Length: 258
Image (cartoon, rainbow, N blue to C red):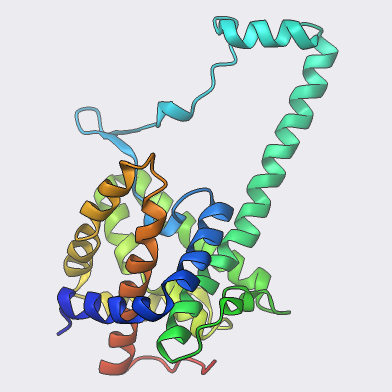
């Protein structure tokens, strides 16, 4: 059985030699995915237990109604009170947002898998930042991006049922990006099945392992949230080491050599 202390110690040993390369890799992924990485913040939502509804994070909601004095002042200043100008500007703005989201999904999902590949190969001695971009090979990029998109969609749909099933599925599927980093051609349903067997009876332990980084992330928030990115290499290296443990200690579907 693996131990939190053992995994973290091996992660620290790796980072003592390769921290800044790992930091650059995690920073690139954070920038493209718009945060510390979607896979690490999948279930960060406000939940109202009394009425059983998931609440939106209103910090990011922009009020475009006439009640918003700032918006009205800005729109008057640039001529958005004209219906045609407003419709054109809103259409362009919406198109840009949609394009950015789609681009983030296509590139960000592939980079997430590349990030896992960087750490797995790094433990084997191949510590090249270029491994982050190795998923952009012909025949890998779009299939990988599509599989990660479906994976996150599955977790989201489970979360809509209730927050607990969403968390359970998140931990059941936790190893899928690592599995795909080793075998990009593996069908998603097979990767999910392998991940389920790996995490069977271990989801609670993995959850506690994640919680053990909470103090570090809270410390990072003291630096306007920027400090959290310095913790991410440590977290990622630890989970990658956990995946290595699963591969070396149990019998699973064969995973393609990279």
